[in-house]
Each structure stands twice: as structure tokens, then as C-alpha cells.
Image (spheres, rainbow, N blue to C red):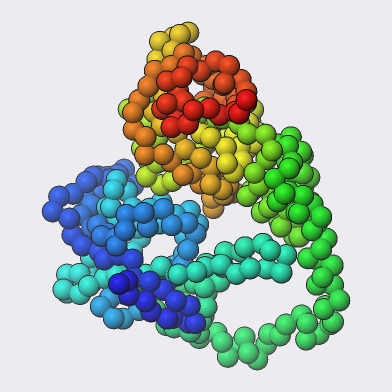
Length: 358
């Protein structure tokens, strides 16, 4: 039974223990090769894919550090399997040298539900609240607890100065009609893109409520489904393949930002769309498919670059099919077009008899 611990009013679950691996891997840091031995044993390997969350580090039973991450646990902490690559690795190694046990704990529920039905991740706020209540030796930014007397003396809430209550419902309802329509699943992709562009412009101009519209779009399922045939080898070099990392982290990315046309194309992909990993095989004739999965949600990294959270299939068979959708790294086809061109082997590989009924 997993261990639970309550800190600052939030429940955390023990999800992993650090250990020294019997062999190392090499990682370049500031131009030099670094040998990595520190590893993380998780209670379940799928925990690597847990998205934005707050976490604790404990040395034996002592709370020493609180942090949060924006993508998933593997992206923040791990490289090549379960080897650790994190700025706290030396602190962990030092503690283990004293024969202490170092463990990581994830918050069990980092979400709150707003009145309009939007699910909001508050991991950063949880981290701040833990720091407000605890002086932690591994958090170098300083304890917020020390500032609490100053805050109590000098800070107040806006609602204590002016009556903001009458405006609350207005703010929540401002875009409610648009949000309800987005969530209905009846909107075509082109309309979602138009609303998204409009909401982004409003948000950039200071309309904070437009963020609620963007959040709804990032989780919207359009009425028309697409298939993204996605390249995964930069410069067509198979030795630089990214698909294994994507599958391990449960993501799909397009980071060649100088290609605006492909970025715009990638940004039309929505929750529920099918992503197929492809690489040209025989020029002008065939391509090979290396995997497939469904988009679970849309997310943004710390640089505000859009990426996809994926539910990758465990299908590991590579098949060769007639060439299509290989004119660029990001190539999108409607399901109807794919139905007319792909052989039955493709659907057997997907594990579905047809993509379109009728």
C-alpha cells in the first residue's frame, strides 16, 4: 500500500526511491562528459508520465525540498530510462552517502475546479504554500515563512478595499457561451482555430478571462478528425530519432519554429486526433510507419511552445506502406483521404477495421 503524507494541507504519495545504479551512462554538461549513476526506482513506471505536479523530497523522514514541474516527471527528472538528471542530484548523492534513504512524493491532487467548470492546476501554488509553512534546507530561494510577518502587516486583499463581488459572475460568464460551444464537440476545426487566434490576441492585450477560452480549446474535440503523419528524424537522420523519447515521455513535439507553415499546421491538431510516426523509405514509392497514438490534450512548455500529450499505442511493429504525407515533417490528412489510399494492412496495424463508417 503506497505511503501518504500530509504537508501544508495537501496530501502527497510516496512514488519513488533514489538509488545508485550498478552501471553508469554518460551525459554532456558544459562540454564535458558526466557519468550518471543516480537512478530512481518508481512504484509504477507509468508515474513517469504524470503531468504537471508538485513534489517533495524526503531524507529518511525529514522534508528537505519542495518543487514543481510543468511537463511530466520523466521530462523534469530523468534521462535514458530511470537515470536522474536534476540540479538536486549532488544533494541526493551526499545524503545517500550517509546511508540515508531519499524518496520522492507527488501531490495526489494538484487541481481545483472553478465555478465555470474549468479544471485548474495549482502545482505552483502548492509549492509556494509548502515554502510558506516550512524552512527547507535544499530550497535555495529562501523561505517565504520568514516574510509572513511583513506580509501580514503590509498586505491586504482587493475585496477588503472595494466591493468586487458584483463583478465576479460577470467575469465568469463573459465567455461562457463560447466555452460551452467549444466543449460541445460540435465545432469544426477551422472555427476552433479562428476562436483560438481571437482569444490569443485578446489575452495578449490584457484580457485575462480569454485564458479560459484557450484552456477550453486546448481540450476540445473537433467534429472533423485529422490524422497527423509526423516525422521524427531531424534532417532525415535515423540516428537522431526522437520517437523513443516521445513515447517514453508521452508527448509529441515540433520544435523547428522557423517553418511557420508547419508550426501553424501542427497547431491545428486537437485532442482525439490520431498521430502516426512516419519516415520515407523508397523515394517516391513507400514509407515506413513506426508507431501511432491519440492526442490526450494540448499543453505548453515553459517557453510557451505548444506540444501534445499523447496516449501512444504499444504497437511496436514497423510496416511499409505506399507513400503519402511525406512532403514535410508535419503532414496532415483528413480521415476520408486516408481511407481512399491506405491498404488493409494499415488498419490491421492500427487495430481498427476502419477510420470512417460507411
